[in-house]
Amino acid sequence: MLLKMIKTALFPLILFACFAGTAHAGTKHVPGVKTQTLASSTDTVKAGYYAATTLHDVDTNLAPENIKDGVTIFGILGTHTGFCTAKGGKNVYSAINGDGVYCDNSFRLWTPTFILGGIATIITWGPNQDEPSDSCVGLGAAYPACNYCDSLIYAGHDDWVLPSCAGGAQGTGCQLYVFGMDACGWTGSGNQKSCAPSWDANATAGFYWSSSELVSYTPEAYSLNFGDGYIGASLKSNYHYIRCVRGP
Figure: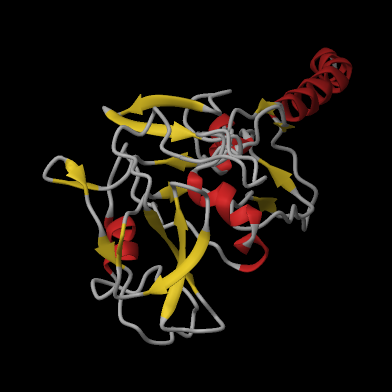
Protein backbone atom coordinates (compact mmCIF):
# COMPACT_ATOMS: atom_id res chain seq x y z
CA MET A 1 0.00 0.00 0.00
CA LEU A 2 2.79 2.41 0.96
CA LEU A 3 4.64 1.66 -2.31
CA LYS A 4 1.48 2.34 -4.29
CA MET A 5 1.01 5.68 -2.51
CA ILE A 6 4.63 6.68 -3.27
CA LYS A 7 4.21 5.77 -6.93
CA THR A 8 0.96 7.73 -7.13
CA ALA A 9 2.61 10.79 -5.56
CA LEU A 10 5.72 10.69 -7.74
CA PHE A 11 4.01 9.95 -11.07
CA PRO A 12 3.13 13.59 -11.91
CA LEU A 13 6.72 14.66 -11.14
CA ILE A 14 8.18 11.87 -13.28
CA LEU A 15 5.78 12.70 -16.11
CA PHE A 16 6.68 16.43 -15.92
CA ALA A 17 10.40 15.66 -15.93
CA CYS A 18 10.06 13.47 -18.98
CA PHE A 19 8.12 16.04 -21.00
CA ALA A 20 10.26 18.94 -19.82
CA GLY A 21 13.42 17.10 -20.84
CA THR A 22 11.96 16.19 -24.20
CA ALA A 23 10.87 19.75 -24.93
CA HIS A 24 14.22 21.17 -23.90
CA ALA A 25 16.09 18.77 -26.15
CA GLY A 26 13.84 19.65 -29.07
CA THR A 27 13.12 16.03 -29.96
CA LYS A 28 9.38 15.80 -29.34
CA HIS A 29 7.66 15.36 -32.70
CA VAL A 30 4.05 15.56 -33.71
CA PRO A 31 3.01 12.28 -35.33
CA GLY A 32 3.08 12.50 -39.11
CA VAL A 33 5.35 15.61 -39.25
CA LYS A 34 8.73 14.88 -40.78
CA THR A 35 12.10 16.22 -39.66
CA GLN A 36 13.14 18.60 -42.46
CA THR A 37 16.51 19.76 -43.75
CA LEU A 38 17.24 23.21 -45.16
CA ALA A 39 18.79 23.18 -48.64
CA SER A 40 20.97 25.76 -50.36
CA SER A 41 19.30 25.00 -53.70
CA THR A 42 15.94 26.51 -52.74
CA ASP A 43 14.46 29.28 -50.60
CA THR A 44 11.47 27.09 -49.65
CA VAL A 45 11.11 26.27 -45.95
CA LYS A 46 8.76 23.34 -45.48
CA ALA A 47 6.68 22.87 -42.35
CA GLY A 48 8.30 20.54 -39.87
CA TYR A 49 11.10 20.20 -37.35
CA TYR A 50 14.72 21.18 -38.02
CA ALA A 51 17.95 20.35 -36.29
CA ALA A 52 19.78 23.35 -34.85
CA THR A 53 22.12 24.93 -37.45
CA THR A 54 23.13 28.27 -39.01
CA LEU A 55 22.18 29.48 -42.46
CA HIS A 56 25.88 29.86 -43.26
CA ASP A 57 26.30 26.12 -42.61
CA VAL A 58 23.45 25.43 -45.02
CA ASP A 59 25.07 27.59 -47.72
CA THR A 60 28.63 28.83 -47.22
CA ASN A 61 28.04 31.46 -49.93
CA LEU A 62 26.12 33.42 -47.30
CA ALA A 63 29.26 35.36 -46.39
CA PRO A 64 30.19 39.07 -46.05
CA GLU A 65 32.24 39.11 -49.25
CA ASN A 66 29.22 37.92 -51.26
CA ILE A 67 26.80 40.54 -49.91
CA LYS A 68 26.70 44.14 -51.13
CA ASP A 69 28.66 46.52 -48.96
CA GLY A 70 26.43 47.98 -46.24
CA VAL A 71 23.60 45.45 -46.72
CA THR A 72 22.77 43.02 -43.89
CA ILE A 73 21.20 39.64 -44.66
CA PHE A 74 20.29 37.35 -41.76
CA GLY A 75 22.60 39.31 -39.49
CA ILE A 76 25.60 39.17 -41.85
CA LEU A 77 26.88 42.61 -42.93
CA GLY A 78 28.08 42.68 -46.52
CA THR A 79 31.49 43.95 -47.60
CA HIS A 80 31.34 43.27 -51.37
CA THR A 81 32.13 46.44 -53.36
CA GLY A 82 31.87 45.10 -56.87
CA PHE A 83 34.85 43.67 -58.68
CA CYS A 84 37.47 45.57 -56.70
CA THR A 85 39.14 43.85 -53.79
CA ALA A 86 39.68 46.59 -51.22
CA LYS A 87 36.62 48.02 -49.49
CA GLY A 88 36.20 51.67 -50.47
CA GLY A 89 38.95 51.24 -53.05
CA LYS A 90 37.39 53.03 -56.04
CA ASN A 91 39.56 55.40 -58.08
CA VAL A 92 42.58 53.74 -56.56
CA TYR A 93 45.57 52.01 -58.12
CA SER A 94 46.90 49.14 -56.04
CA ALA A 95 48.58 45.76 -56.25
CA ILE A 96 46.69 42.49 -55.90
CA ASN A 97 48.83 39.36 -55.66
CA GLY A 98 51.73 41.46 -56.90
CA ASP A 99 49.93 42.72 -60.04
CA GLY A 100 49.01 46.37 -60.55
CA VAL A 101 45.29 47.07 -61.08
CA TYR A 102 43.05 50.13 -61.14
CA CYS A 103 39.62 50.24 -59.48
CA ASP A 104 37.41 52.80 -61.24
CA ASN A 105 34.49 54.84 -59.95
CA SER A 106 32.02 52.03 -60.73
CA PHE A 107 34.13 49.42 -58.91
CA ARG A 108 35.34 47.86 -62.15
CA LEU A 109 38.86 46.52 -62.08
CA TRP A 110 41.32 47.27 -64.92
CA THR A 111 44.65 45.92 -66.04
CA PRO A 112 47.34 48.16 -67.48
CA THR A 113 47.80 48.24 -71.26
CA PHE A 114 48.94 44.91 -72.73
CA ILE A 115 52.70 44.73 -73.21
CA LEU A 116 55.01 42.29 -74.94
CA GLY A 117 58.76 42.43 -74.53
CA GLY A 118 58.40 45.36 -72.15
CA ILE A 119 56.53 47.69 -74.52
CA ALA A 120 52.86 48.43 -75.28
CA THR A 121 51.85 46.02 -78.04
CA ILE A 122 49.19 46.21 -80.77
CA ILE A 123 47.18 43.15 -81.88
CA THR A 124 44.27 42.43 -84.22
CA TRP A 125 40.60 42.05 -83.28
CA GLY A 126 39.98 39.07 -85.58
CA PRO A 127 38.62 38.12 -89.01
CA ASN A 128 36.83 40.82 -91.05
CA GLN A 129 33.51 39.00 -90.89
CA ASP A 130 30.11 39.18 -89.23
CA GLU A 131 29.85 37.67 -85.75
CA PRO A 132 26.35 36.53 -84.67
CA SER A 133 27.06 37.66 -81.11
CA ASP A 134 28.31 41.11 -82.29
CA SER A 135 31.28 40.49 -80.01
CA CYS A 136 34.60 38.66 -79.98
CA VAL A 137 34.36 37.60 -76.32
CA GLY A 138 34.80 33.86 -75.89
CA LEU A 139 35.45 33.11 -79.58
CA GLY A 140 38.95 31.72 -79.15
CA ALA A 141 42.44 32.17 -80.55
CA ALA A 142 41.29 33.46 -83.96
CA TYR A 143 40.26 36.66 -82.14
CA PRO A 144 43.51 37.81 -80.51
CA ALA A 145 42.31 40.97 -78.73
CA CYS A 146 39.45 39.24 -76.91
CA ASN A 147 41.31 35.99 -76.51
CA TYR A 148 44.13 37.70 -74.65
CA CYS A 149 41.69 38.99 -72.02
CA ASP A 150 39.60 35.80 -72.03
CA SER A 151 42.73 33.75 -71.27
CA LEU A 152 44.37 36.18 -68.89
CA ILE A 153 45.14 35.16 -65.31
CA TYR A 154 46.13 38.37 -63.54
CA ALA A 155 45.92 39.65 -59.98
CA GLY A 156 44.53 36.26 -58.97
CA HIS A 157 41.53 36.47 -61.34
CA ASP A 158 40.66 34.67 -64.56
CA ASP A 159 37.43 36.43 -65.59
CA TRP A 160 38.91 39.37 -67.51
CA VAL A 161 37.27 40.54 -70.75
CA LEU A 162 37.93 43.12 -73.43
CA PRO A 163 35.68 46.13 -72.60
CA SER A 164 32.46 46.55 -74.55
CA CYS A 165 30.90 49.49 -76.38
CA ALA A 166 27.61 47.69 -76.90
CA GLY A 167 24.12 49.17 -76.84
CA GLY A 168 23.73 52.48 -75.04
CA ALA A 169 27.44 52.62 -74.25
CA GLN A 170 28.44 53.51 -77.82
CA GLY A 171 28.42 57.27 -77.26
CA THR A 172 30.00 59.08 -74.35
CA GLY A 173 29.50 55.96 -72.24
CA CYS A 174 31.85 54.07 -74.52
CA GLN A 175 34.51 56.71 -73.96
CA LEU A 176 34.09 56.54 -70.21
CA TYR A 177 34.02 52.76 -70.18
CA VAL A 178 36.94 51.87 -72.44
CA PHE A 179 39.12 54.49 -70.80
CA GLY A 180 38.65 52.75 -67.47
CA MET A 181 36.95 55.93 -66.49
CA ASP A 182 37.95 58.31 -63.75
CA ALA A 183 41.52 57.29 -64.48
CA CYS A 184 42.13 60.34 -66.65
CA GLY A 185 39.39 62.81 -65.71
CA TRP A 186 37.51 62.33 -68.97
CA THR A 187 33.98 63.73 -68.76
CA GLY A 188 32.80 63.18 -72.32
CA SER A 189 32.79 66.92 -73.13
CA GLY A 190 35.32 66.46 -75.92
CA ASN A 191 37.78 68.98 -74.46
CA GLN A 192 40.21 66.54 -72.89
CA LYS A 193 43.18 65.29 -74.86
CA SER A 194 45.22 62.31 -73.76
CA CYS A 195 43.86 59.54 -71.60
CA ALA A 196 47.14 57.92 -70.68
CA PRO A 197 46.77 58.00 -66.89
CA SER A 198 49.73 57.89 -64.56
CA TRP A 199 48.63 54.57 -63.02
CA ASP A 200 49.00 52.84 -66.43
CA ALA A 201 52.70 53.18 -67.21
CA ASN A 202 52.10 51.29 -70.47
CA ALA A 203 49.27 53.55 -71.72
CA THR A 204 49.66 55.01 -75.19
CA ALA A 205 47.78 57.87 -76.85
CA GLY A 206 46.63 55.57 -79.66
CA PHE A 207 43.61 53.45 -80.58
CA TYR A 208 42.36 50.75 -78.18
CA TRP A 209 40.00 47.94 -79.17
CA SER A 210 36.58 47.34 -77.66
CA SER A 211 35.01 43.88 -77.93
CA SER A 212 31.99 45.24 -79.82
CA GLU A 213 31.38 44.74 -83.51
CA LEU A 214 30.14 47.71 -85.58
CA VAL A 215 26.65 46.38 -86.34
CA SER A 216 26.14 48.71 -89.33
CA TYR A 217 29.32 47.40 -90.98
CA THR A 218 30.34 44.07 -89.52
CA PRO A 219 33.92 43.84 -90.91
CA GLU A 220 34.75 46.56 -88.37
CA ALA A 221 34.72 46.85 -84.57
CA TYR A 222 34.59 49.86 -82.25
CA SER A 223 37.85 51.40 -81.16
CA LEU A 224 38.69 54.42 -79.04
CA ASN A 225 41.57 56.85 -79.41
CA PHE A 226 43.29 57.46 -76.10
CA GLY A 227 44.89 60.55 -77.61
CA ASP A 228 41.74 62.63 -78.19
CA GLY A 229 38.78 60.50 -77.05
CA TYR A 230 37.57 59.88 -80.60
CA ILE A 231 35.24 56.89 -80.95
CA GLY A 232 35.78 55.19 -84.25
CA ALA A 233 35.67 51.82 -85.92
CA SER A 234 38.42 49.88 -87.61
CA LEU A 235 38.71 46.81 -89.77
CA LYS A 236 39.08 43.89 -87.39
CA SER A 237 42.35 42.93 -89.08
CA ASN A 238 43.92 46.23 -88.00
CA TYR A 239 46.26 46.42 -85.00
CA HIS A 240 45.34 48.37 -81.84
CA TYR A 241 46.22 48.39 -78.13
CA ILE A 242 44.11 46.64 -75.49
CA ARG A 243 43.32 46.84 -71.79
CA CYS A 244 41.23 44.24 -69.90
CA VAL A 245 38.44 44.74 -67.36
CA ARG A 246 36.50 42.86 -64.69
CA GLY A 247 33.01 44.16 -64.13
CA PRO A 248 29.68 44.90 -65.79
